[in-house]
Length: 497
Image (tube, rainbow, N blue to C red; front, top):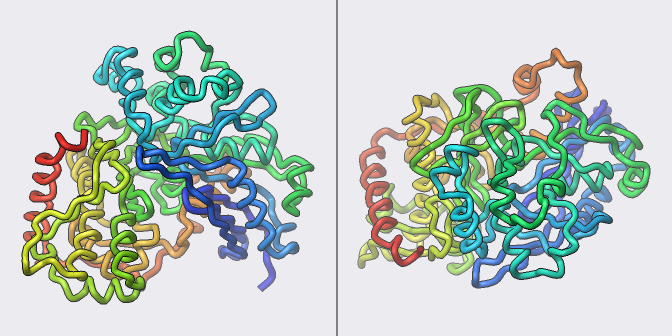
């Protein structure tokens, strides 16, 4: 099949960069490339990367693509891991590493900014979100306190997807979806929150260092001649606003209108749904984010999702296939064994100093299969918090769209369906964030009368083989285990604060 015009979707994730070329005429992914990232990790919660690693990964990805396919590209859309702090000097060069979304080293800075603003309730009422470890705000103050020389050179404050856009176009811009995850963005007015910026640093004009906010169906810039030559792409093709990986994942799974709920099983676990009005959860389960298609995207994020299963799988020296086979031998509820999977601290619930725990161990359930299944169930329990919040707001989804590595496991899909008590649908494209970025770019280059909703309906397909129906016979045991999971968290919270 000849390749028609393509849209490039770039996803800058925690573990890797992915690049797809989506053939908009034949409705297929014409090419896919991936390059991995390193991670700087320390016991105190530090999680960092170097921005130059992302650029090198981008080069490696484009080098894998057929030159003829690269010349079919007509636009670029970029997805990026949320919350990361990319500090640049006046020349656009990073002055320090990028502190990532799963960095929990900034707990004290978050508390300090919150107090300076006037407290958490005031923050939520006026701008929509508290300042939590992981969000960008605390990272800026951390840099000032811990790396004063680097901070003195700070001229631009970007998020990861903003930085990739800057590298491609030479322009500084962002959009409301990703910006809403910084904690210094007002989700109601969709503007930078000047008073929060002053609470971070009253002596510096941080506002002047932030990028311009553009609309989601706007072209942010064009691919420069230098980057076109570097990557083998057509010069001057438009680059859309892009957005955070969760916002792009929402587009890539069809969550662009009310009623659709998406769950992502990756390094982090997320559950989110599009809303036409801002939605604030006063119980601190959902973050009040904006979407990247002119609405809002309330979202729950757990920092530890596939982490626990991968840790146990490596410890037990089991392949993915062997893991699924072992999990299948254990009954739902793991005979009372419950994992608290807080290996890297946790964001929801807000336990930055949390640790992984095995609870409810006895002589009957301390086996390899029980341990692995309990870790899978823990990821689903964490996501159940978010679905409960949506249901309290009147949203009762008929299906959940599931993405991420865990969606390829039949056992994990069944666990998710049974604990959430909702059927599971899986989009055919496994690179939902990159695909969503490509669809958003397609929206941006179409005329203003073309709706994203129509684009999504035309281009997203679902994998019938991975559709999973919940087993109602398992509801009662999972409701009981979920209650116990919450009780264990409550009991251990004083140790994790």
